[in-house]
View (cartoon, rainbow, N blue to C red):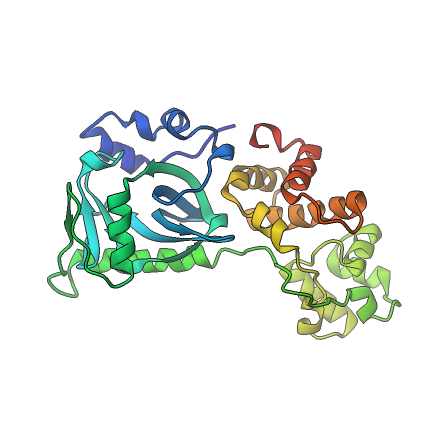
Length: 319
């Protein structure tokens, strides 16, 4: 399995000061172990990635489905008064890195791709305090950023691009999560148990067994299929969308963890679908497997997910 590495421009910059071995796939594995086994921790710097967007982020805090993080830039250079410019000696990058504490906020776990560095507590504490509106003392080997000279300063463009990148990462589609005890009416029940199976199959482009699973709510409708069902049945798009059964919160947390990221990417390539679709169908496949094997007991979702993927020969060393 090939592993994603730090973008080449970062390696080129690092090579000017120190050997880039720490940032190679082999170097990252030596420092942090197998990507599937890395535990999230405050102070880690991750590459966050979704489609064409790629960004480095420093983790300040961890929740079930997201981290509180600040973007980190290396090239092009840029800074503002709420940023910290860290000397290359203190990081694996070997060149100055800017921590944009003024842009701190949530980043979904599902977009975290690879841990690339671990920063010392004083740097992390500075970023966290500055993000909370404080005025922390500047750590050794760093300096506080300066206010851009004008709205035309290149730093303003860097900041605007970071804001756009963060918006794109936060918009990456997540799994539907069950909230409380809210009940979901299946599509079959909504149609009073008398659906036109051939018409639905033709509208969705799937065989009858798949239509039956959709009617029972055991597999999800994709966004385009919601409109197709609405058109074929006369139901509103909103009514059809509400028939999709959300997944248990613990399963969502497990499936969106970075340890499974490369597995979902490989599954997407094998099925010829997007990464989001591969994770979505995998989540419902895991749910169906657990329902068959555990009855009403709360499953070990991490174990069930691993079992489902192993059945597709995808778990492998990721498990």
